[in-house]
Amino acid sequence: MTRDQREIHRKKRVLEYAKRIGNINKACQYFGVARSSFYEWRDRYRELGDEGLNSRRP
Image (cartoon, rainbow, N blue to C red; front, side):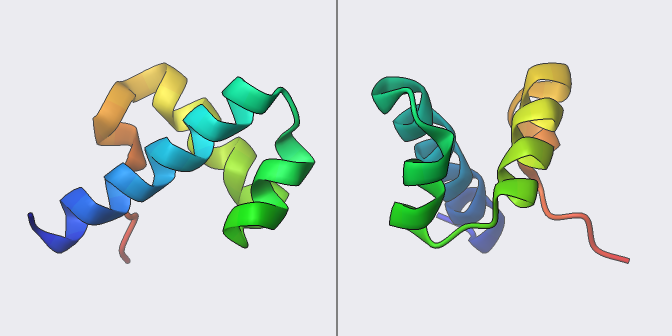
């Protein structure tokens, strides 16, 4: 598994966990993720799927 694939998998786990428990704040605290990052990931995932979760490198 490549680094990018691991990162996508991790982000999907955060999104799925938040959906399952129904509490974004608790999910972000559990995984140590900023809520602003969560919302960015969620929006990009909804729009582009897995490809939207790739890191945006300069």
